[in-house]
Length: 355
Ligand SMILES: *Cc1c(COP(=O)(O)O)cnc(C)c1O
Image 1 (tube, rainbow, N blue to C red):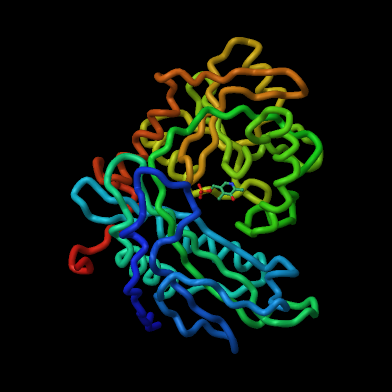
Image 2 (image 1 turned 90 degrees about the vertical axis):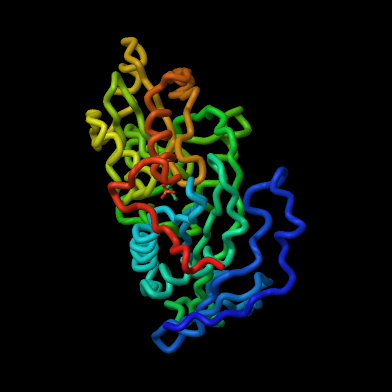
């Protein structure tokens, strides 16, 4: 598939203040756009960033056929640009698309398209720990028709925004025992916009009560923990890395998977299994050392400093020597090219591509 190019002559990067900006508000200069109609993807173009024109009848505005991904590109120690786990994100967007009855994206559109876009936007990627380019691929249903049916037309786009090193403030979370994020047989395993829409209200209630987020529990009994907000949930209890199994109600996070691989290769005991509130309460009350954190592309490792279960506060260990920071450091080192990448997670852009 040929990807056409139209470059902008008015680059926003010239006015962009890298010392002070909000995440996700300003896009980089170009975006990738491709269309799906008559059963195939076509018209792939890297073009200047601009507003969308959409029919008010476009199905994505009404019936929820939207899917997205989130991944990052980094400037490595040797100044090359590297995209983290591109192939895995491609696999996952296709899993999400299948669940939402939307057309899958071929490799030469997703992976090549993102490589070319990131190559073009690489000036936006500053070196140094924590700086990155956040890449947001997404697909929306664009057929103009109010009838409830599978859309025949789609738009695939990739936009990018710079991301700075930020201090992941430890989070206070409340275990949610009424509202539900995902149910067996539902869409919790897909990165579908509706999952986020449905989570806002319970998260808002928790925020009004002084928490940063909720910990989601299983839909049936609210006895087993599943995720923390929009991150996967991990614990290190007396040196054992514990996390609920990924599946229909726990999204298969790429960060989660990366941290599990790193932990296993460092020889840590790792258990992927259901974790009950009872087990957590017992671990805290019997004086075990409990670390708890969220895992996701944005924050990588987000320490939890407080977990409230039915009105009772528990305080996980967050001091500097906590083991979770070792995991984070190793992942960062692999991404930055400071340590060998035995998993082939980095897609390093060829120097030849760069101008
Ligand atoms: C995206 C996401 C995650 C984290 O996935 P990463 O691939 O690590 O960014 C976890 N849970 C939910 C619900 C998500 O949407």
